[in-house]
Length: 333
Image (cartoon, rainbow, N blue to C red; front, top):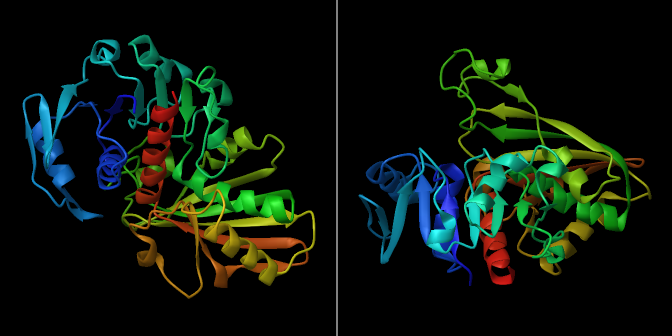
């Protein structure tokens, strides 16, 4: 296993570490962030969405200790760490600021061999590949792919749906809407924000938002004609996407649901995609590790217009895939 560094210890960075340790996938050789060690340790130890960590967590100058694991810590407020001096092979950038090539390239310039970006790149030119587990991760080429994007949580949720429907029934075009929990890009109270709609209190409003998922999907399927939007709602985590597709071949609800059941049970999407047979609300999928959880009772069809609903925990499901992809890249690079 090559050496992995974690750059950015916010919502996704902390869940990434939880998954990495819980699943025995990796222990980062260093964590870098801009906050103090004691505060970051406390935030990791007690998480509002996912509860208390099972072992003691402490932070002191230059180190975070998680149970039996002492992990070196570097404050990166002034500059990106010297990854070459630290012997780092793969940097997982969880800051949300490496979505341009210049932002990701900065890690390579500091000596990292590969960068895994936990967000959708602005354009395909801003990364070397968009690689998703269960979709196209096996196409990773260590010689050509040095900046790898994981897309977004919504990208991963929709990609599993697209993979199944495209293979079984074909897709002419489609529209999606995702109902998404609020995130740190929004405001707790009414105040001017860069995106005007985000200026209203996240916990009190339904807020329309853009989604980069359609662009990221087209990085994988260039001919795919799908676009969509998001609505941020007052829940702390857990989201659902409705994907409305015009299929190339006629299908029935029973055929579609059977295709999802089969994909969940075996094949490349096993562990990535799951199905719900009963009627649930969003609390059911909080802390669920799957990227896409198909609500089978919500599948509807009218002629060749098909509607599929996929739940996803936008933090935990995505962090599980991010940890698995990081371990895969580190093992191959």
